Amino acid sequence: MTAQEKSLLYSLLNNADCLYSGRVSSDFAPADFKDDADIAAPVSVAVQDAAVPDAAAEIKKIALDIAQCTGCVLCKARTNTVPGIGKIPPVVLVIGEGPGADEDRTGEPFVGKAGQLLDKMLAAIQLSREDNCFIANIVKCRPPANRTPLPEEAQACAKFLQAQIDVLKPKMILAVGNTALHNLLGTTTGIKKLHGKFFNYQGIPLLATFHPSALLRDESLKRPAWEDLKIFRSKLLEIVPDYQTSYLNGGSV
Ligand code: URA
Image 1 (cartoon, helix red, strand yellow):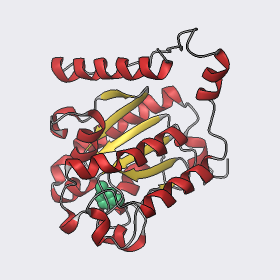
Image 2: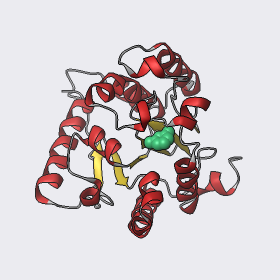
Image 3: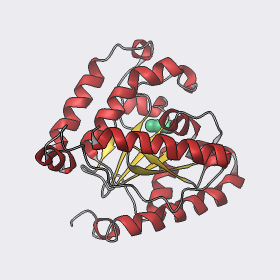
């Protein structure tokens, strides 16, 4: 079995246990799996772990594939595809739901009111799309009237997000809102129950918090969202102790 397969199994079992028992996996430590010796030579393990050479070019290629995609009905009404934007490679990958009207018009994720709030939330823990984050969505085309993407739309788009994750290799993932949580973890349990807890997503620590649109609708969610962000920052400081350096230097480091 390959290290990637073992890691996937481990994360599925860990997440299932957390969902079933209510256990909080904030003390989650990613397991260090190795490929079985007779399946892969050590060299391929090293290559698998290494940063993707010219990740920016790979991300551009994925964006071009997204622009050509007709894999679901969302392609019919789109003005622009919204592949994602940010620092390459990022420390943190932020994953939202899907483009709204402003994003459809500009081709950039999170540029409307919710996006402005997301930027403030990230800035509060020294993260930004300019310096250390990449921001993407579950679906890359706007659902009509901003409805929740249907399962088949999320499914059709999943290969693009997976390709982005494979190239970007983020150290941590921040999932915002129910759609990101449900599609990434394969659960239907609501964000109110699962926010602020760590899950293992393909070996990457993932925490879900409330979507900024939800915070705009319901002020009372701002406090728990802030608590989630503090938990996220603590873990990030453990994994990447100097992650704030690029932010504090305006991306110059
Ligand atoms: N909401 C999202 O989930 N994503 C965007 O890009 C914009 C709003």
